[in-house]
Amino acid sequence: MSGAGVLAQGGGLPALAHGVGERSDLPIPLFYAYAGAFAALVVSFLALGLLWADSRFSGDRAGRAIRARLPARPARVAALLAALYTAGWLLVGPAEGNAGPYLVYVLFWVGLVPASLLFGPVWRTVSPFRLLPGRPRRPLPARLGYWPAAAGLLAFTWTELVAPAPAAPPTLLAFCAVYAAAQVAGTLAYGHAWLERGDPFEVYSTLIGHLSPLGRRADGTRVLRGPFDGLDAVRPAPGLVATVCVLLGGTGYDGFSGAPAWVNALQTSPLGRAGLGTLGLLAAVAGVALLYAACLGVAGLVGGTRGLAPRFAHSLVPIALGYLVAHYFSLLVFEGQRAVILALGLDRLGVEVDRDVVGPGTIATVQVLAIVAGHVAGVVAAHDRSVRLLPPERAVAGQIPLFVLMLCYTLGGLTLLFAA
Amino acid sequence: MRRRLTGWAAVVLLAAGCGPLSQTHHKPGNSHEVATAPPGGGGQGGEARAVITVRAGRVSPPSGWLEARRGQTVAITVTSDVADELHVHGYDRTAELRPGQAVTVRFRADLTGVFEVETHESGLVLTQVAVR
Image (cartoon, rainbow over all chains, first blue to last red):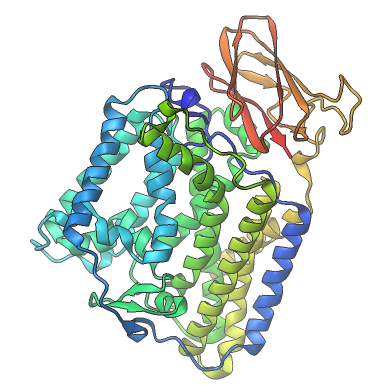
């Protein structure tokens, strides 16, 4: 959706993938889909037979401590100023060529993925909400866990993919106001512990940051560590599975929301576009979650161990990351340029988006590699956790339902890239 | 309960598994009736063409894909029963739609990707141009 197009009108916008963006990706070639599916299958079975028999990852204890500290306060003040700048665009920016939606949907939301992957939990480091006093008035109830973050991520995904006018400044301002109010209220009541579990973007950034070589231990020590050790350090809590399922399901919904069959269904539905879109998004998230619950249930039966579900949620993080990269790579490349051009006023100097930076072949390659790499990482993480949790004689059989689960997500992801 | 969940798993597995073989809507003329020129010429000078009517908020033929090769000319003819504005995303072409009058937007497809063709007032996706 072009800046000129969308932002000029208030209502009646078609449901668009990604909130902003004027193009979507071509389907990947059939060969790529098969190559990806084949690679995922082979890796899963090799992992089952050949990987180690004793757990190797040591989670939070792993890594070499380093002394790399960003001056947190100035960074947070800078982030606050950037947020106010964005709000300024949304409040008083022009109807055409408004940088606000691009700053929110592209640089912030999509940009958090590579930033966290490279530098660890960046939103935690720069979050302006951490300028608020961190002393809790009461302790954060343990059963709350990640549920507020899951709800927040679902709300953001809804705003981005289902809301009637996702790129309209009033829509974004409403979301940002509710988001900021929730974080301020949560922090004033529960201190910074709230942000760790309740701020959707901090949870999103921290989960992806677990795969970064620059890790952060639970006690705050910065460490250099392997991504699998980082992943192993994700601590299970209520709502963690839901959070990951929202990320996977939301991105999956994004994948099929542009398919002509779904576009037609949205346009002709008696429920209205937003009504059916909401149902579709919820169904995608519920589908991902049901599949997870079913496969983990079977794994528990086969492995003779109870309560496995929360302890394998970490292995879905790389799969969700693969989905995110596959669906947002071209958006970041193309619309990221537009975000910078509009935000800095370079459009007035005649600077234009370079649309030939990456071609369809490169995009398809990145998409398939991201999905398959996410799958491989998920399989390795799940394998290591299985041999730790399951009795040795059942560890191999107990992994089969987990691999079936991951194959479903991976084949589903490839199918979306190929057919939607 | 567990049994029911397993049933669900089977359904999802099937749905996920049968995907890569289905060719549904990406082959022109498969699931919709958008007229597309055959690749390599023919038709109107090798144009990728779509003729679309909007009546009472319904798009006919139903919103589908219009395939085009990079460099090919795309021609989209739209007749709407209400005044509206036509917009081709990415290429940023717009055209005024007057009630009952057929309007044709024609452009060279020099960007690859999938681009929505929509109406601004009614907010309908008329078709998506897929340029390879």
